[in-house]
Image (cartoon, rainbow over the protein chains, first blue to last red):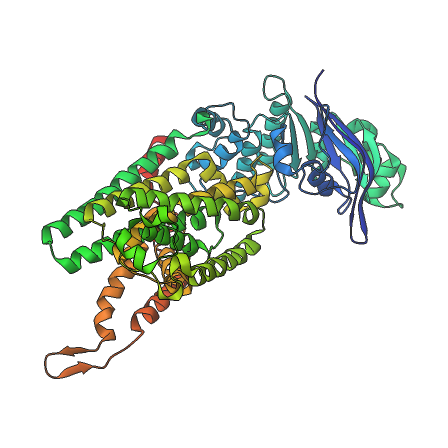
Length: 250
Length: 351
């Protein structure tokens, strides 16, 4: 049976703020799920909770048959979960090659030098191989962070706003890359992607999960979510009319 | 597990190793050829300091956590070497309360260095289990507490350390050859650790511990490994130092020595083994050049400079500030000796 990433009734509170409340989510392998919602809706908190960076107050997270609720991030990562951050968190004093090596080591099943060469080639980073990550342009840093995350051949990949700060061409390249990760011939992993570029989400994702004020607002195919009245209202406000739904979320 | 070892990093470390070993070897041979007592002493002091600063670098440089406590391991190595190398005759007079089997023991230079390293290893395991779980700032403060704790033991455990009076009668087992071997071996060990998967993970945690964790790396375990390795090297360095200095007291393993070693590391470059050696060289040279001024200086019959006590320490402190302003990562920055050659070769290959 293929592995599933399952989140059940997850709740997280920061002092007086309920960041997540009873969120349920299921991500299969070879599936791309978009996670959208207005600013402050709890998207990053959900990704942080799944990856073990934050610990939820209630609910459970499981990968396959393993309940990983409350586990530390390194233990969860060793189970086959990789992630990127909203702003690239690279090891800036290390070279591009060393950043990639760190991603590969988690898997412990590849010859690190061979796999580095493969990743450099696949992500077009050969020219900058010996440069320190801190000296790269922003677009390259984002690309390197994604390359580092997929280095361990994860079963589930969480991408937090991977297209933020990228130009149109770079976003298009990124979209093709992410599609490649999902394909069984590529990585065959399940991908949860947080993104504000809704057009990209609608083109890329098999399913979309919408959060608002820490709660699930809707979940379904991109088409169903696009025409969901509550979703449009959350994004555009109550005065927005039903006839404008299509253009609002594309 | 060898799959995780990068051939690039190991090759680069090996290149740096042989170049550094060669430079240190040339210095030793030059001193042997000159055959002057004060020069020989200067070179053995230099090699011993290289071992101590490289040991410090292997933790601070890779983890990014400042340790004020490593001098405690230096002291452990020095006291263990003293107790194991002083002749039974002197021990019977100076340390009558020692257990008989230690009193009658007298070992060689190599065994003393190894025993110093082993004893430091034991203390590092016990302390590291607690310290490695702490956050960066807390760990730095805890190392300071460790220094104070160990200093109290050195100063008050009179049956073993003779308290504040200190120990004497340690045979001078140091030679130009064995200090060179020790400096090269410790440098090689530090470079190999830096090139190892654990060393790389520790360097990643220096930049971003949170992101390191999300890559499947246990930051606490990695810091523990770095702590233990550097303590082993520091203990070995302490044992070498004791056999070079012949007599010492507990105050030689306290704040002044901590400042001295840290200043060399900061000036040379915290993140680089080559930098550690360069820092020792610069501070040793500055010290030697200015030491004459401390006792006053006469140039001919006309110019007489008065005594300037403390000028060496003050100049080194100024040098640290200047380096931190001009080049915060120290003279060598993040680079090792081989990086200049290796990087150029890689870039050429990829363009």
